[in-house]
Length: 227
Image (cartoon, rainbow, N blue to C red; front, side):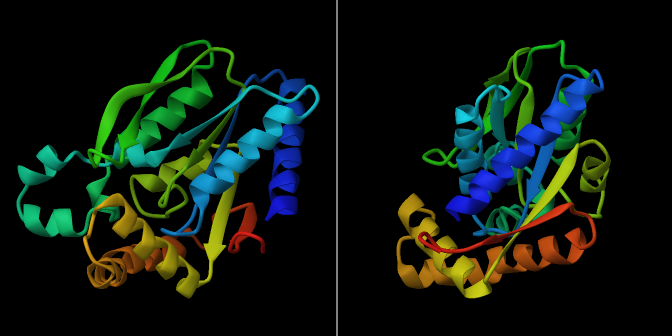
């Protein structure tokens, strides 16, 4: 993946330079893909390489994980047990707030903007814990559903400068997610972690790929470390 990261970093710089020449000050790139595809890793690796480029833009990465509905909110909703079991599905996020954030990032570069992050230890979002300052010239926004053709997510494709879809081998994604659930304490055995992955995450993965088709500029194939 190392050469892929560098190619993407170079692409970010090119897009930024072209937009800057037209008098615009900020680039927004949406990175979507199914659970376990490595979106966060790709965003961080590209960010690291852009930061090292000569005369590269000032860049930040934002995860849509911060827009999970809190556990308290889910518990007050009908069928709360089912919602918690399916946490990570599209309807367990505040999709409207994601759209509004991206709209602000694109249209209000002269404003300081805050965004939530996700505390994996507490398994809940932390409001206003990330600040996007006036100096930020490129925002990488990553999340499962950013390129979905279903509302409210469908508005995002028209608000960003470029759209990346990360694809991944199904078995590799299952291994990654199952391990992640166990390490995060979401489940306490490998068997339960695998069951959750198959019953929830892979259903979400199918939704991502089905609703994101034809809505991306760049397809990025995720492979295992060293691939």
